[in-house]
Picture 1 (spheres, rainbow, N blue to C red):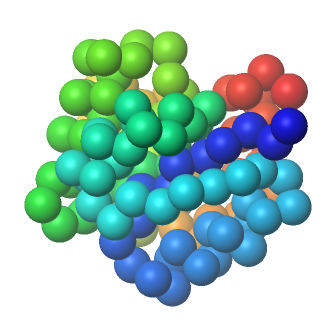
Picture 2: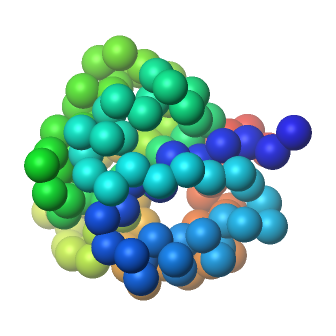
Length: 119
């Protein structure tokens, strides 16, 4: 059975790119903002979350803090176009397990996900 990834991404083209990266290896579902991501953790029970940082309604950092408060062992990878060290540190401080800069390198992304899922 394939592991399920929750992709929290408001941008359609970025989401399409992520589905292309994930489709051979994982099942996936989409949240369009941070609040949806928080709500979907309970209903979808994902094995890992790819969390865009800049989203409407609730940003990825706040969503990560809320999810980690309830599910401390759920791996979350931050996705951001802002690949500065300060952004990386903010993501890690919020509770993200790792960090990927956009545009995402497919092989690198799959490797990080597999490592976090212990595969």
